[in-house]
Each structure stands twice: as structure tokens, then as C-alpha cells.
Length: 372
Ligand code: ZN
Image (cartoon, rainbow, N blue to C red; front, side, top):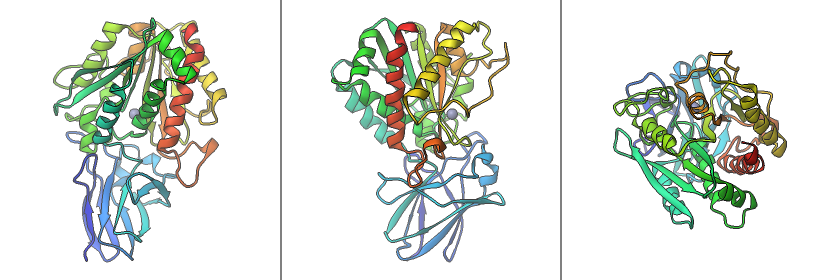
């Protein structure tokens, strides 16, 4: 039997360079019309009883190659449980081995979140009492931008994810958030639904997700650089969400992402926006402090550098939303590696932990909403 490598499925990404004995040489395919790449997701079959060595030869040219040291590839035999496997990065190549006790195995940069699973999630949540589903717009490939709204309070809360489609942890987070918010007996969720109207967009980049992109949509555009002037031609996803925000207003916003390099969960704020005041910023810092004291899955030491006064990039959603609406806005980053302060050697940062972190984020918001 010959080795079969395949990525021709929803969110798949890999190209075979060469198969020589037990060595499989691969490359990650660039995002369409873009030079970004780092997301990979493929299936290997026909190697039962053998130990294969996979080498991703172009890892060194990936968008965030500095993120590879300390990273571990995720492997699954059933596409449900994704475990870490020992991974090396040397001479620009990422390599890992797998002993095939099964006929088929799947490999990915992080536990995938397919568009089929997205539709399952939207269907399930839209059926829950008190939930309204809206299609805010369509992508260039014709896919819907789904928004689920619940609660009837005055505060307008927006939580949106996966502008960068390879950051699948962001949609696992949204699944956790939507499950909690629709749980009738959950105290924090009930408080939020009373005081706020919550708008959740679980996937802002369905085209990049289905195409197996790291960072861009079907036009090769990085959506998180489009928030100043989104267009129908380049970034209809952002235009749709920003128009809906203009209609509702925004008091609190969280943009959910993944980070390739930093082994921790962290928040980034809106320092450097033209209308910055310390009082506005303090509401964000207070949220971060409360979240850190609420869960060992969050910390305040590691993160991005803050923009200098007046230097915020308003094409990024958190800055745009903070400036445009005066919202307490933030970007949540979760690791492709692990949250090292509370590490899990077997799974690393994982879907279950994404969902638990979403619960903690919502409870923290429930406790602070009156001050926002
Ligand atoms: Zn991102």
C-alpha cells in the first residue's frame, strides 16, 4: 500500500513535495492572493504499522516562523481528540514523526474548526429560546456572516472571532461563549442577558476558514487591517459587521484571536487612539485584572507592546471600535502552544480550555458590566 496524503477537504492545507520511504516532505500552501501561510491540516493514510517522519520544508518562510520553537503539532485519530506530538524546528523545517497503529491519522496546526461544525453551531444556538439569528452579509465566496443575538438589556456587547481564519481556537472560544449564554440556569449568563444585548459573530472569515488560510479572506486581504474603510470588493465581512455595530452602538467589544509565538493567554487594548483617556483605558485594565484573578488560564505579564500616544492603528478592529463608539474594546489572544502558567503536556492549549476561558470571560464581564 502506498502512503496517501490529502488536504482536499474543508480547511485542509498541505502540498506534497516528495515521499521517499518513510519520509514525507511537505509544504504549506500560501493563502490565495497573499504571501501569508502557517496553517496546515492534512490526512495521512496507507501507513499502518509504519513510523513516518513528516517534514514541512517551507516552515521557515511562514508568517510567524519565530513561533515554531516550542510549538507542538496536533494529531488526531478520530478528528475529535487532538493531542500534541513532539515537534522539532531546525534549518527552516518543522518535523515530527508518527507511528501508525491506525489506518488513518490527521495532523493540524491546531484543533480545526470546520465550516460544517460552524453551521452545526449556528443551527443549534439559533433554536435556543431568546436567540435571534441574522445574516449580516456575505463573503466573496458567497458564504454568510452569521450573528447570534440574545438578551434585551441596554448595554451593547459585541464578541467576534476568527478574522484570522487559521486561529481556530477563536471559534472554539465562541462555541463555549454561546453555550454558556444560552444556558438557562447559568447565573452569570442570566445577568448578562438582563443587562445587555449580546451580539456574537462566531466566524468573521468563512472563506479563509474553508480555504485553509492562515490570515486572509478569498481576496488575500487581512480583515483586521480593514476597519477604517472596509469595502464591498475587498472586505465585505468587515463592512457587514461594522454596519451592524453602527446600527446598535457598542459598549463592550472583544475580538478573539490566536497568537503563534507567545505561550499564554493575554489581552491587548486600545492605547494610542486619538480619543484616549485614562478613565476609558482603566475600564479595560480593570477587566484584565479581574479576569486574571478569576482564572489560572489568564495572566497579565506576557503580551504585546502598547502603542504610543496617538499611534494606534485605526484599521484594526479593537482600536476602531474603541475610537468609533467609545467602547471598552479588547483583543483576546490565545496560544497555538500552551498557556505555560497552567500547562497541559498532553493537549497543550485545547478546545476544552478555549471554552472554559470563554466562560470565565463572560462571568468577569457580568461582574463589571454596570461600570462599563
Ligand atoms: Zn489574529
